[in-house]
Length: 275
Length: 356
Image 1 (cartoon, rainbow over the protein chains, first blue to last red):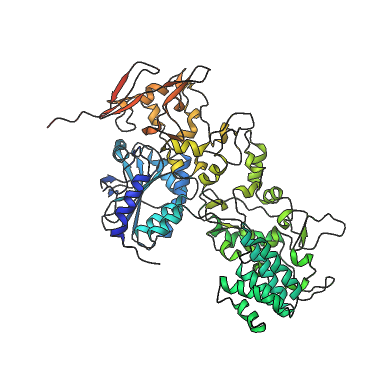
Image 2 (image 1 turned 30 degrees about the vertical axis):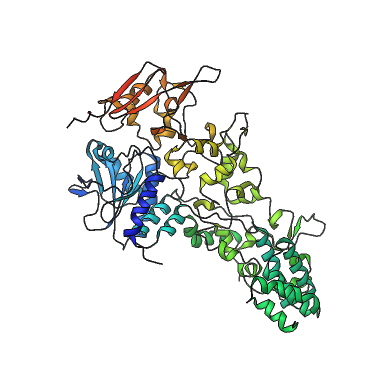
């Protein structure tokens, strides 16, 4: 996997994200340098929102007693473990008005052992324009926001994981885009060419079993679905050659080699039926 | 030696492969129900055959078995799915997808009869019944919900949205939910079971560029329970269907699933919302009323709007389809609504900038 020239990719990505993201711009905008306040933590002491050691930062705004937050914390527990040995710092942010026992229970239920920052008066929530729960924010090593991601019922962790991997330089922009908009998972036989491919595969097996007539029928079946299929033409050529019908095999050999000059089946048939 | 039962095999497969299939499913793990034992032998003579596997139909037992004798074909030439993939080459790509269906990865014959079947695709049972044989939780939702989704029973049924082999999206979805939903909900004149017209979402989203975050994330399932629901429009939780409703947080369970309920319960705030005049919370003012509270829909479009904050252009007025313009205007310090439900009112949530 190629390392990413992040210096080049970032501005384009941030701009694209800013343009594509909600025009309402309630949340902090991609590319924005985030504030890094120090907040009290659930366990006492203080901690910053973002890493101060040049790590990628992930912060999860959540609240106890809310289904989507609970589900997100559980899901993020899996995400966190994916990056255990990587320079990624995770924190959870909850309102300081949340009862501490409920916050502890929510973290325990999720199996998530992360610092919980307590946001007094929801000041950080307001400053970043969060306005809802949960939201997962992801910032680069310099503290610039890549994305603020409100709750997703589907592919939430997958989207977080892809963005973190992008910031770590593990995937490039194209791979990130594909992870965020995965390709359609067609059913088998979704296209005539795919169905024709099965006929060709069956025909090859039939040829191996000394059944050239049946292999020829399979090749014809395939060509009826995908007339331009080079493998189907090659199979027809091989079957006809095996049947000693070289004059009929020649145009099939030509058709196959025109589409793929290196087609092994067509070359084998030409050996048996030279022009 | 006793062979493990199909049930034991599936439980094992789920344990081994379930991580791959369900690793990204944050919901608590469902108990894997066993499938009915699959029949791999040809249908008994006299049974009505709908579909036959090509090698079986051609009498070429030797394509898969060690002998070409229908009465005594002998063992298979390869074990498990490898034999199927010899011809079904596209499965190399399908089973390399991120999310795999454990039974498919374990054995094609959990769902397909390799000889013949009454069903299309050589399925061992009618497709929905086959899926529900394991997914009894979805069966219960589909059958018992007050509001049903026609997609479950039409066209490719479960396979309208799910690929039962492998997919790139959680829950074996063929695409992200939005892409699946809009592929059907992009026509004019489609109505629900009670005759109510359903929105042409492609058109609506093309015309309204301020999209609600779940729409933006292509995640219709954040708000809609696609297999069935007890709430109108297949919503995952309650949402007021009308313009006015007495305030009760339960009525807004859908919105409060993400949005902070304090935005409507706190009369004063300087942090929870920008729809405030100074610290006077105007969400509270509009919504939190014991009798005629305005519901979210009074001012917001839930999918997409032309204005910021999902504010709708107008509100329905009366029973004749009139639309009363909201005339919302954003200002440097807040906003205003003019000549609508009330006379022009302006709010300011921040102090005006001082002239230099």
